[in-house]
Structure formats: structure tokens, C-alpha cells
Length: 453
Ligand code: ACO
Image 1: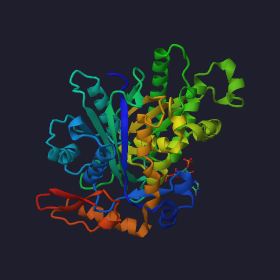
Image 2: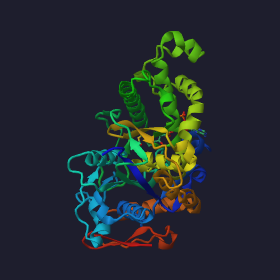
Image 3: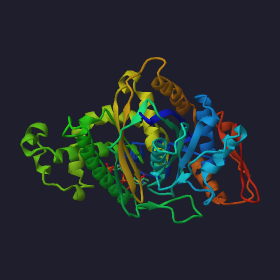
Image 4: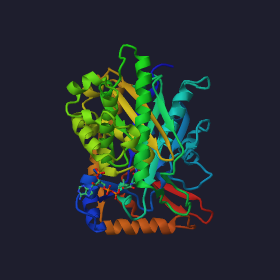
């Protein structure tokens, strides 16, 4: 099959949020630390009515309804998540409740976990399936979803929650480029969840940033090499190769620094005689090594400054959901894709090349790219895909603000009730967006029961 890619996208996020300026005051940190320092304005939060299963039920059901997809047309469904509730039992198996009433049970795929990378791994499985001898002409659905909550402290404002579901198949408007994907995987304890009685990760914040930037360097270099080999017309691949660049976004400021980092990579690959002309005044960074420069403030400032225009044009449009909801872990990068599609005109999107960098602590990372179809007329699939996402901005604005006080008591409640059975949640159902699945109860056998609002 040709032009394998994304045919449809749906997203779900909590209807409640906490304001980061209010959280700064509440936490007693200097004003601007979360908003200007991290680049975060609001953080999506779930009451005890929502868990990973309910988020995924909502996003898949909405995808099926909004695009009028036949249940029997789905041959693979898989979930990337690091939010674990039933340990041995997958979220995918929970989602089968949506298909069973239609007599559909022949669906491949299961859950994939490695921090924020699981959604990308699930996506690659789906692509491989569509391209394989087992493919039976049906579509795949990939779900990336998480609830990100941190213990009190510096990581807490980098939480979030949300889900993205993507319909994968041939002849898509967003096509995955072949022969360019580049991966970097390595053992690291930068972020992990060893305590199964607690929702919060163990996180070494500084190390996680170093690992992220290191993975970005390596993936970018390999991507550039592969893309140059593939498109021999374009021997030197640099930032100009992409119309848009999307990143896993733990917080928006890291992404702005990442563009600067790629600019530094381009600089290091520039022939010395061109440096004075292309990079005036930056000569002194010529001998800086990638591995020794993750926290070099002068270098960071110099290269975020010269790449500011690139950031504004090629990346900033992708940061809407990250800024308004926070880190959705596996869904973060795909929330970036949704944000880009709703923030640009279809004429700008059509025919563009989108670079994507996926990172999951532990660590697993990949850079790959998408080429968007040029067909942007009213009846095109691209138009349909983008039109369906138009309500995202309205929904972001319709959310209800929760005070930091209340947010903390909701977190405490979540923590107290984690793995408690039987359990009846107390969160207000009317606060949820219409069409949201919610937890009705956990019975004495720890079985979770859901209903739709
Ligand atoms: N006004 C403006 N900016 C401010 C202010 C202020 N009042 N106060 C601080 N800042 C700036 C700082 O200068 C810093 O910016 P810089 O890095 O450009 O210098 C930024 O705000 C953050 O301040 P720090 O003191 O560096 O923050 P801290 O160390 O307390 O926490 C961290 C940041 C480590 C990222 C923490 O939030 C964390 O652990 N998050 C979770 C881990 C994470 O997301 N890692 C990323 C990859 S892994 C993943 O996706 C989970």
C-alpha cells in the first residue's frame, strides 16, 4: 500500500484546569517561573471520575462517531500509555467494549509502554502492520493517552492529561516518509515509576533534560544523514528541510531550546569558511562539543536567538495544547500535531514537510517526518481531517478553572483512592464535556465500570 499515514485524528482532554500563575503564588515560587520560565499557562487535571481507561474510551468513541467509521473496518487497535491501572490487563482490552456490541472482535494490537514514547511505538507498529503481509485492508487505530501527575515540588507544574487517537491506513493526507526514521535508545534512570502504589514518577529533572537533548542531537544527525541519502538532490539537510518541527513537549520552553539546539547542530556541520557569513559573531562556539554543552547558557542563548524566527514560524503553532494542557506524556507530540493543524491555514499545511521528535525517558527516542498531501480542496481528506479538529479551541476555552487548593485536594484524593476497592468516585459528572466516559465505580473485585456523559 502507498501513502500510509494518518487519515483522521481525534483528541480528548479534561474539562478542568489549574491556572499556572495561581499555582506559582500558591507554591510560593517567584512570579513567572512556571509561565515564563517553563512556558506553561494552564494545566489540565482529572477528577477521580477519569482514569486512563475512560480517557481512551472517550477518544476512540468520538473518533468513530465524528468520522462515521464502521467498526468492522478496524483491524488493529493499540494503545501507547504509561498510566497503568490493572497492570496485567491492557487498556486495549477495555476498549474492546466499544467493538463487541458490533460483533467485532478480530482486532490486532495491544498496549505499549515506555514513558512518553509508547504512542510512537504503537504508531510504528500500526504502520508496519499496514505495510505487512498480514494486512487485511482494514484501518488501524492508534491511541496515545496519559494522566501526568507529579509529587509536590519543581516537577508538579509540568503535569497534564489527555488523549489522541489516530486512524492509520493507505492513501492518507498525512503520509509517513519512508527510509528516514532515526532512533536512539539507551539505558537511563531519568524518569521511571518504580513505586506501583503511587501515581507519581521518580524523576531526575536535570538528567531528564540532558537525556532529552542528547537524544535530540543523535536522532537529528541520523535523520539528516538518511534524508540526504534518500533525496540525493539535497545533500546537506538542515532546518530548512522542514516546514514545521514538532517535539515531545514536557514544557514549552524546552522545545524552544530544542530548536536552538538543532540550530547549533547545523552550525557544527557548516563548512568553516561559511561560518563568518552565515553565523556572524558565533565563531567562538566552533570548538564546543555537543556532549559538553547541554547546560551551556551562553551557547543556549546564542542559538535560541538566531533560531527565534524558525521557532516562531515552524514550531510555535504546535504548542497550543502543550501550553494550555501541559505534558500529556505519550499524547504530547500528537497534541502538537493537532495544534499545528488548527493553528495554520490549510493552504500553509498542504504540501508541507513536518519533522517530529518523540522522546520517552528511560530512554527511547525517534525522529521521523510526515509529508502532507497537496490536495487541500473542500472535499479533500485533509480538509475533513482539519475541520473535525476545529472544536478543540472552543473546548479549551470552555474548561472550568479549579483553584490550586482544590487541585491539591483532588490529587490527594486520587492518591488515597488509588488501588482502593470497592470505591465510588465523588467528582462531579456534570463538569465533564458531553460525550465523556467516566468511572461509575470500582467494585469489590477491582473491576472498573464506566458510563458516558
Ligand atoms: N521568571 C521567569 N523565569 C524564571 C523565573 C521567573 N520568576 N524563575 C525561574 N525561571 C526560569 C529559570 O531560569 C529556568 O529557565 P532556564 O532553564 O531557561 O534557565 C526555568 O524557569 C525553570 O526554572 P528551574 O529553576 O530550572 O526549574 P526547576 O529546576 O525548579 O524545575 C524541571 C524544572 C527540572 C524541568 C522540573 O519542572 C521537572 O523536573 N520536570 C519534570 C521532568 C521533565 O519534564 N523533563 C523533561 C524531559 S522528560 C519528560 O518528558 C517527563
